[in-house]
Image 1 (cartoon, rainbow over the protein chains, first blue to last red):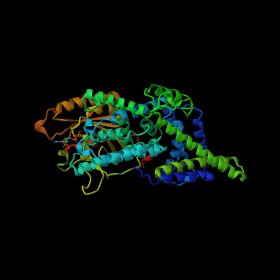
Image 2 (image 1 turned 180 degrees about the vertical axis):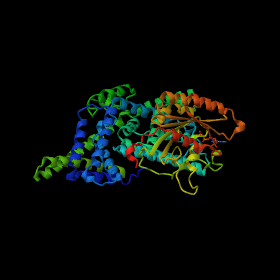
Image 3 (image 1 turned 90 degrees about the vertical axis):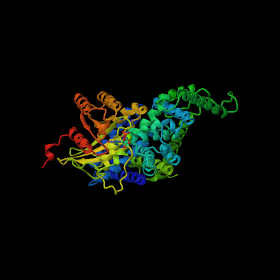
Image 4 (image 1 turned 90 degrees about the horizontal axis):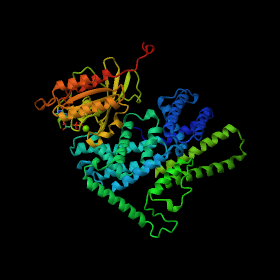
Length: 378
Length: 206
Ligand SMILES: Nc1nc2c(ncn2[C@@H]2O[C@H](COP(=O)(O)OP(=O)(O)O)[C@@H](O)[C@H]2O)c(=O)[nH]1
Ligand SMILES: [Mg+2]
């Protein structure tokens, strides 16, 4: 498994090499690939394939490139990690959770988890007492919850791996100190499901799909593939979950779900003490309109839904998506400001078209890179 | 714990290679990397079989982290090729049965395990065989394993039943004991021999 410490070093090394005039041809390929994406509407499977093909083409190009003459496999691999991060950061808003279906599944999953959180207990999944370790679970949850702090598929995958590592350590410790017989997947999966429910990671479905589609396929093998599959598996289990999936009385299950739904509605009402006539009201009791408007807004070409919304159209469930859109807008705005500032500063420099193109190409990723690194550090 | 009782059987022809002979994950004609998925009821001995296979070759004092549900082990065959098994454990509880396709998708090998003292587990094994014949990749290597062969006095599934069922379904069959290590290495060696191999191009040979 890869460490995360060298992550930004690898990325800056990649950017440095791209700044070298000798890599102009590579820079051009990357740029034109990214631009080509804006010509078509989102289509996750196609997009995934296109990106994977591009990785393969670029890997060959890098291997044959004078700048990497005599480079070891590891050096080429580092360049590819940098490339993946660069390309997917650029294409993020275009490729992440890019269809109305994905948005809908994310929403439904997180709402269901929200209900389950109110009553689900480890015994409902028959998790043995020796594995009920709140401290470990909390660590694993935290890893999953970090997933939206990153845009690069590799870094998102790292969150998945770290979560699984924490759970694995818990199982290994239990088998050593508590004399619990190692039960492998029989123990691992239920704990992972429980941790996932406790964590309710943001945009779970979209994040897993993003990793599956855009992480370099040569890296989605062995352990990484196994643990990612387990997360997909846990997510699927939760999505399909009913009383029969659990060790719980069917009536008790239905009653608990119903009670959780009622409580949710109550909390939403309380959030808006003033009455419906206020246009700022957020107290939508009926989730219907919001869910419907989700479909409408994302099926349009616009990356910025909610533009035609009134405050009253929104529900609590919209907060997550609004926040992510807000962050996108701010990131882009900040990037633009820097670029504009830089342009006016460098106005006296000779304008060589290619150079200029390269400068713009390089300025933005640095910005995004720094941003995400700061977030990581916090 | 039945499975850590005695020493592994070393009479086999295959040679186990070090714990993590990573070749960058690459698979070529001489060094195969193989995804192997384990299926079968809870309690039939899947985990023990794998631990026996993977741990057997380690110096017990060496500090090797043994993953709880994903393990890999490389064996060297007599023709100087190596096979790295990447072993995917699946949760055996009934409530997770519907998730199995996520795990066996793309697997080169499925090892379907039952317990010779439990006819019920033999039925479940047959269920998995049918499911994999329908939904597994067409060239998947299927192995049927009757485990806990050391428990003769409690045997309820005759050897003959296993042999016949496997023969009818064109799959490899073996009875093992993770407890005594009987036939554990043979299981993996026989699988290795049955793997479809990418042709070694003649130009590569000296
Ligand atoms: N007698 C005997 N017991 C075994 C054998 N293999 C496993 N067991 C026991 O069967 C139980 C379940 O084994 P485990 O590997 O956890 O089964 P899994 O659920 O299929 O992974 C454990 O108590 C083991 O000690 C075997 O070959 N012989
Ligand atoms: Mg097991």
